[in-house]
Image (cartoon, rainbow, N blue to C red; front, side, top):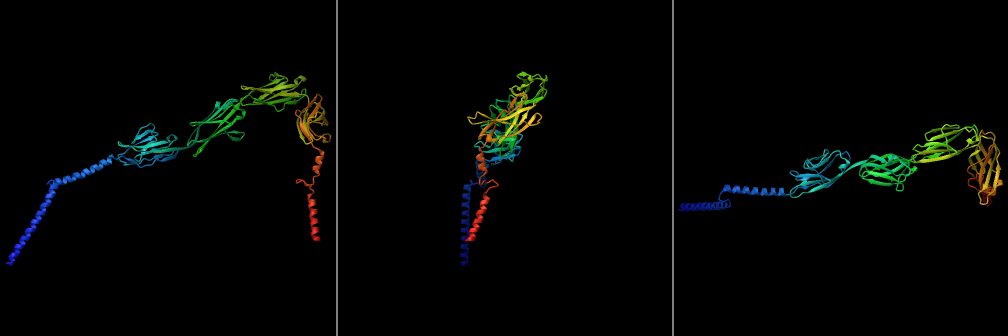
Length: 489
């Protein structure tokens, strides 16, 4: 009985558990069927479509987002002849097309060149611009720009190609040969980067001097640097230096300039002594780059070449006229004249029989001079005239005639200052030969000092430069007296 009752209870417990399990399974299946349209396979496909739709939305968002440039603007400096690479890093790199511009002119679209003469330009490492063997003309502002339908971005780089100054050419008015009074323009055509500083200077007789605004006007027009000198004179002749420099290096060149004008005649002696049948040589030179024609005149009349008693010898800018007088009328005034396309100039020489006095020199009261005379000397004197306002009278000193000489006499004479009052005097040397008197052209200055002032100076007690000063004697006596006083005490 008890066993039967236990078996019935176990049967009901098993049935209850089975019912509950089935009910729970049906509930889960119904819920799953409702969510998947009652088809397990269709439910899986729907899940896959949802995932695909999510991925497509993300790709569309990435496609509509414009690319960016991660490179910052950069200032590039390279020396001429070196290579330069300008960076343009974009994100994303794949699928992004960029254009390169130089000073707003398009050079590249992607890898396609868009300009002429692009042999030295190329695209490297994706988007970077490379310039090979750079030149000054490559200096510019370069722009890397993205090509995108929604928005474009760009970055700009500045490239400076450095080059030391190179003077390509020079020029000068009329090739550097200009007439006196005209204008002179000198130019230097210089290429350099950065822009150079230019200094103009002139060299004369191995001395170099920089030009400034007082000497000339300075102008700059592109690569042409010029200096303008108005109304040039002979002293503007010289070598002009154009010196250009920047932080990379320097260059220089010289331009020769010769200012021409009418010739300038020079004669070493303006008066020459001679005698009958004595040959005299008259000399002159004409200094001018435009070589002049030299002519000789006697008392205003043109001398025909090599007509007695004259012989003319001209070499370059120097000319000699040899005169052998046969009569007194062969003496007189001879003129050397030089002429060129700019004008004429002349100097005169006197050919005389009177004595010629030269090289007068004064050393306190001592005088010296030279006498030229082919005729025998008869008299010689020195005349002194005071420079005071009332000094109208002359004091005459007779000078002994020197012996010998052979047409040239060296004379030395000491003036007796006791015959003169202290002061300044004009001294003139006069000499007479068998023909006439001759005198020195310019008077010399003779200073006569007061004899009393000279004696006071000589008797001075102490002068620092006097080797015979009396000061050491007094010093010795003072020392001895001091020593005796000390011993007595």
